[in-house]
Amino acid sequence: MKDYLNEHWRAILAHNGLADFDSLWELKAQWFEEPNHRRGGWSGVSRCELKRPDGGTCAIFLKRQENHKARLWNHPVRGAPTFLREFQHVIRYRANGIASLEPIYFAMRKVGKDHRAILITEELTGFTSVEDQVQRWLKEGAPPRPVRLRILAAVATLLRDMHAHGIQHNCFFPKHVFTRTNEDGSVDARVIDLEKSRWRPSRTLCAMRDLYTLNHHSQCWSRSDRLWFFKEYLDIKHLTTYAKWLWRRIENRSARKNRVHAPLHALSVKNS
Image (cartoon, rainbow, N blue to C red; front, side):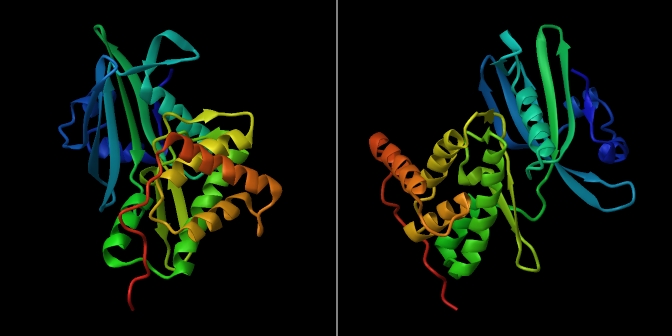
């Protein structure tokens, strides 16, 4: 596969002495996430601040891995770097108009017997993961319900668009969903960690997986907020026969696996 370079970032990378694979691989940068050692290799993430040629700075996430492979349909025996699959999903999301990450660079190299890969994406400036946002609310008090619902609406729209294109995220945890509230009160939503995404022929199959995952990890939200999100995702005002069936399937799946427990804390509106 040919190297990918976002033309908008070519001058920025060159200005920082990062114009090629080797310079990116050798860059000394602290780990944002400690390297993951498995699959016979390792994979790690660093956050780097770069200088712009015209002044100012910008931030990127530099992901590097060595001998960290997964079997893909077109690489069934020897496998391919997991970043290849993630990069392909990033491109697919963007091709379908789904808000996600902006890719900056992707390349693979074989050095002796080692297979290396680099994936760079732009930092989501101003965005906060839903998980971090909820943890802050649990400590400081949640905002009024209309504010919460604007955030839920943005996430619901994002997930609905993904499923309309047959894309199942497979790991739709609150820590992978990011939102940003703009000055006019509107909310933007993005999703990250796309490696395990897959195409499914049915929107219902996508919904049962991703809605279950999100619901299971959102027990601090009130039941009324979660039900509102569910209706917003389906773009309905009242529960239809299909909606009731789908809601029961999601809740029954949680009950069968005995994985939903009452949260230690629940969101409550902060005092004015």
